[in-house]
Length: 245
Length: 75
Picture: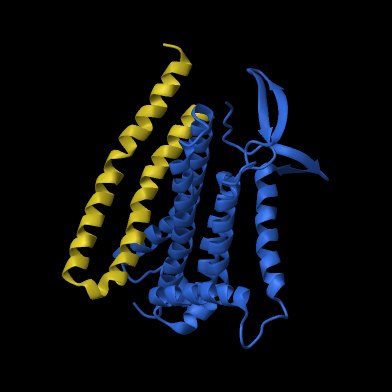
C-alpha cells in the first residue's frame, strides 16, 4: 500500500507537469460549468424543477451569508467569491470519494517493488491546491478591504504610529494575516488528506461493508470543510470591511 | 533503534499528544454553547454559527499536529 504525500505527475504538457489532483480539479470545474450552462438563457419567470433547486440553493446561501455579514449590500458584493469557494471545495471533496479515485492507475516500479500511480486523486489532498485557495482568500480580503474602506484607512490597521501599543498590535495583525494563509491551507489539506489515507487503509484491511461508516464520515467532513472555509473567509471579509472600530 | 521504528513512534506520539488539548477545547466550547442554547432557545442559530466557527479554529490545531505526524511518516 503506497501513500504519497505529494501528488504524482501523470504527463507533462509543454514542460508543465500535470498531476492527478489537477485533473480532478478540472473535472470538478467542468461539472459546475455544465450545471451553469444548462441554465444559461433558459431562466423562466415560473421556474421548472431544476431551476427551482438551484434557486433554493442560492437563496439559502444568500440568507446564511446575510446572518453573518448583517448587511444585504455586502452579501451581494461577497456572494460570487464565497459561493465559488463553497461549491468548488464541496464538489471537489465529494468527487474524491467516488469509486475509481485512487484505485484506477498505472503500475510502476519503485525501490520497494511495484506500486500504483493513481490517475485521479482528491483535489484538496494536494497542498498546492489548498495553499492556492488560501492565498486567494487572504489576498481577496485585502483587496476588498482596500476597495471598500480606502487604502490609507485600511493599512492604518497594520502600520499605525499613534502610540507604542498600536504599533505592536499592527505588527501582530500582519503576522495574523500570514498565519491565516497557513491555517486555511493546512486545515483543508489535513482533513482531506487524512480522510484519503483513512479510506485507503480501511479499504485495504476490510473492503466489504465496514468502510460504510467511514465513507459517511468523509461525506460529512467534505461538507463541513467547505462550509468552514467559506464561512471563515466571509467572517474575515466582514471584519476587514467594517467602517469604524 | 532503526530510523523506521523511531519514525513510526514519533509520528504516533505527535498526533496522540497533539489531539488532547483541542478535543478538551472543543468539548468545553460545545458544552457552553449547549448551555446558552438551553437558556435562550430563540438565539439558537446565532449561537450555532459562532460555535461552528470557534470549533473550526480549535480543530485546526489538531490538524496541524496531524500534518506534522504525516510529514514525519511519509516525507
